[in-house]
Image (spheres, rainbow, N blue to C red):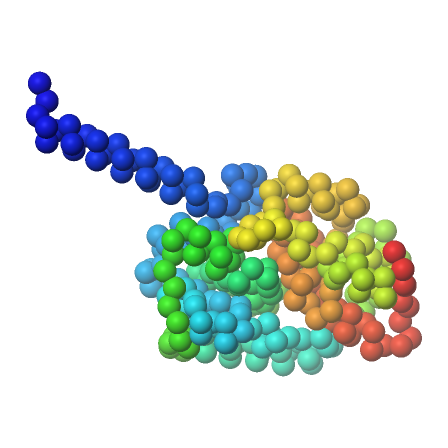
Length: 301
C-alpha cells in the first residue's frame, strides 16, 4: 500500500515530465534531415554550441552591426560586420592586401588557425561571409550556427549585452590561402563561353532584371533557408532540387556572385554543404563587373 507522500511524489514526477515534454515540443529545432547534407558538420545547432561553449579552443563570432551586438549577444562572442571583410577588386595585389588585412582582424577577434570558430548572425544568413573568408584562408574548423541568434534564444540560450570583451590572439593569424575559393574577374570573363561553368546571381529578381552577367541564373539567396525565424537552412533534398532544377548541378564549376560577395557567400556555403566539388565565389561581384563598361550586360528575366 502506497503512502500519501509516495502518491504525491509520483504525481509531481508525472507533471514535471509533461512540462518538459511540452517545452521540447514548443522549442523550434533544425531540420531532422541535417545528416543528409554532404558536410553536416559545417552547421552547428544551439544544443551543440551550448555543450561546447566553455571549451578553450572555441571562438564564437557574431557577424552583426556593433549596435545590434551591444543589445544582445551570445556570451563571450566577438563581433565583426560584413563591410569589414569587403573586397570587390579581384586583382592580385588587391587580394594580397585584403588577405593581410583580414588576418589582422582575425587576430584581433582572438582567433587562431587551430580554433573551432562558430559564426552566427541575427537571421540575415550573412554569417556565411565570414565562413567563406575563413575557408579562403584555409581555416579547417569553421561552422555556422544554424538559425543564428533567434535559434539560440529559442532554445533557451542566455545572452549578454555590451561591447565585446575578447582578447587578441597570442600570435598573429596566418592563413594558408585556398585560391580556388575566389573567382577573379578574368576567370569570370572566360567562363561566359564555357558550358561547364554556371554563374549564379544571388541578388533579388529586381536587381537581376536591371542588369546581370550574361547567362547567370538567378536564385535569390534567402531561398537557401526557411522563410520564418529561426531561419534554418532548408533540407538537403529541398536544396538539391532548388539548384538542380535550375541547371546548377554538381558536375559543373559554379561561380556565385551578388553585389559585393556577401549574399552570394550564402550560395557558396550552401553548395559546399551539399558537397558540390567546384565552387568559386566571385567576390568582386556586380560592383566590380559593372565598373568595366566594356563588359557585356544582360537585362530582363
